[in-house]
Length: 369
Ligand code: IPM
Ligand code: MG
Image 1 (tube, protein in one colour):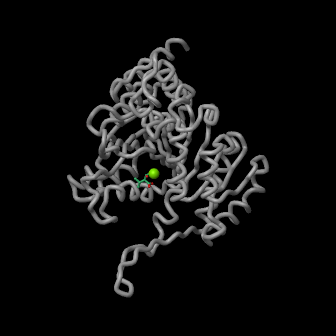
Image 2 (cartoon, protein in one colour):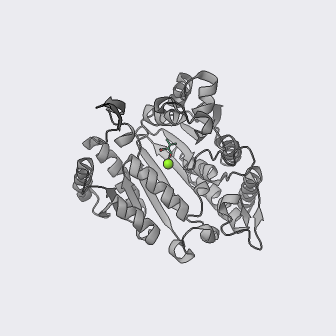
């Protein structure tokens, strides 16, 4: 579909501006090793874009993103822009990009790296070997439904949003999830609130109607409240979970924490035409921004996903993931993944040093193969 290997880099705000450059270094290094010629450009998004252009998603950024093979994004938002009206906030930049590129399928793997079992908020035996994939619908549902707003009704303000899904939107995300389940452990759990919301009754009906096309996948359904509970009770019962935009937002944060830290979770957002946007699941972390404390591994792992899903270089993805595993095995930790404090054999390091450790391990892995 795309011949070019143009990568658009959007660091955004807060720790986005620290973790993205580190991940780009890793990306350049690995691309070179695998003989891939990538062409990088960068652009503005979020609060930084508001400050410089007045818009959270400048036209130029969207145009560049539309012609790029893939986008690497940091995070957007922060206290400086919290008082802006909803439609002018930094988050709109990200939402505009997701919808402008039709990135309807958001893949959020929650994978526990064995050395981090102690950093999880759950007991190690509950999370050892955890490998869940949350497939979140990303361009519809209550995030985008109309009408929306805050207006005066009977002399008081009322806020309202619309939770709407058309059949084709449900079908396309469900098919992505079924296909991913076929490549994994053949179990798919669709999460809804069909006992209360008509929109998710339709969701359940459409997902069920597709099951016969995937006879090798065991489909189950779960209400979202129960799914939240099951994720913290017995997370390993899940393989692939598919759900709408808002439930996916919430459940993916829960799943992230099971793996030790939000700072470990990558994501890929894919369109039907092969376009992809890659970003860590975490936000801008204003409390630690600018201090070289942020964990760059979620962004580095997002780069691995980019090699796998957009650049057709799964071996490059494997090397990055193995290098991250080794760095953790060697005891290197950023503050978010020290669990109950630094243990013997562990070293607390910062953002840039973590990036360097990953590069060192990539180098060593390459030498041994
Ligand atoms: C996420 C974030 C975003 C979302 C925000 C920043 C708009 O929480 O990617 O999970 O709600 O989708
Ligand atoms: Mg979120």
